[in-house]
Image (cartoon, rainbow over the protein chains, first blue to last red):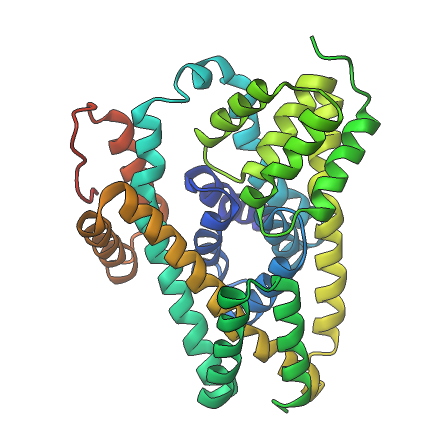
Amino acid sequence: MIYWDLFLAFFIPNIIGYGGGPAIIPLIEAEVVGRYGWMTAQTFAETLALGNALPSPIATKMAGYVGYEVAGIGGAFIAVAATVIPTLLLMLGALGLLYRHRDSPRVKRMSQWVRPVIAMMMAWLTLGFLLESLDTSGAIHTLIIGTAAAIALIRFNTHPAFVVMGALVYGGLIIP
Amino acid sequence: MTPPATSWQLFWAFFRVGIFGFGGGPAMIPLVRAEVVTRHHWLTDEEFADVLAIGNTLPGPIATKMPGYIGYRVGGVVGCIAAVIAIIVPMIVAMIVMLGIFSRYRDVTWIRGMGQAVVPVVMVMMAQLTWDFFDKSQAALGWLVSIAMAIIAAGLIYWLGIHPGWVIGAILLAALLRPTGKKKAEGTA
């Protein structure tokens, strides 16, 4: 059942993903590309690029788009609901309990202990994008775009939307 | 008590946050604060800090938990739905429209070139996030524990093919249940 698969694919990453929206990206990739094969690494990268160039939370943009791609409006609704509703209900329902434990060392420990695993999955995803790019665009284009993007993003703090636009211009004019 | 807010006010407040909030959920928190505390006085500064702290005790995106909770608190169920829809729906629609047009013309060579050129950019962004998470992780746990946990998790997930949900679930459970003596345990599961 496609709706149930979609629900699980977004429910699981969001219920274990401590560290906000960005932490959920590698977990979603593991479901969408790795487990269910709904998207290729290339289309996932394109989706992520546009998602990073637009405002608003990344996790719901990914959920809405992937859900729509897989099963239309209903799919988008299911994927977004699986992303938003469970933790929101927990927050509304268990507010008193959470309030008492908001400074608890155990709760802090939960997000601390998960972080190395998320970081490792992010590194794995980075490597995946590198291999994908070497395969489709070749070493030279990958090196040029990657270096330019790194300098723009890290050294000059350029807005991601402009970096993505720059890559689109380069890709449209030079790669073909 | 805070003055009752109409759902429209909530909608527009979080619509603005969604439209101007670049850089993912955590980067949007100051914008939420500007609307909720400074502009509309729905919450005091302290209440806002509490809501943020509570939101961080739970997994999932912070940028939907906060609007949902604040919307519920000041406008009931309708307020909650209005706030969440306002922050997420406009850009989901934008994604679907833009990527829809893009994939329709995927066969045109220069459009395909654009798609390819974006992959190294996403790689760099993901590398930045990787560094950010490793850096925070080593600040809290030290390099040795962080790297050991990462390697063990990589072996379990990518070599043995265990679903990441089980690995992370086991770690969360261990973090929750282990008595709070000073030192932290190494990799679990």
